[in-house]
Image (spheres, rainbow, N blue to C red):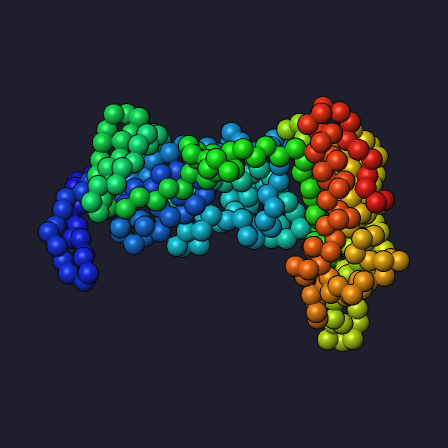
Length: 338
């Protein structure tokens, strides 16, 4: 690629022109880097992109994982909107649904590789070893020995290549994982083409399998999992006057029963901390408990800051106990409060 002449602008004035090898360098070839490259190409902005296609997804994601986003929200964005995940799965005969069918890790990686070949064929699968700022431009060194000067650098490497971690964070080695799910698990969901919810056996089995996977990810890292029970909720009524189905106590009970079953099956590594009991005295929804407003007014779901302070003495001790058990190499403590 021929050098590009660009002008620097200082306080609105053009200063001397400088010659760079390209206008933009993109470091990283995951979804964000590839999407940006596709947009720069459409805008005819000179760029070079470096990295291994979908490298972090290939090397650092749990085997068998599914994406958290729905299929309709998992396409890599490019200007023509033509190379979508939906189109790719249809062409390849892979399972796909806009909603309700989890996108598998393997499908998404294969889609990312195909997207690169389709939209970013100029990708250079080499590593950037050094980036230095030099008076309005950047010098870049590649592992091939090549050096180049660019006007702008976009680092899109994900979380896998942070060479420096602040001391305050580096000193933290979590001894316990706390999972505060339970809300989205009780809403109506489109699953395998049908609207359903946690009270239906097939959907219940799917939700439980995902919770078990979450616990397994933590446990595989040598860390115990503490599930918080789902608390009671009471949203304002629907426009037709009916209550919201996700506020049905039977759904909350089904979720809480699931996490207790998982804890019972893995007593050394999984426990339950009873947020529901702490936040809903007597099993009933309350905005105020012992004079403290713990729920957001006119919300019925979320907790106030003072509510967090109020609930902490009930919730924190079992979490600390689980962490200390892990530090001691012992068995996870019995579930707290329930």
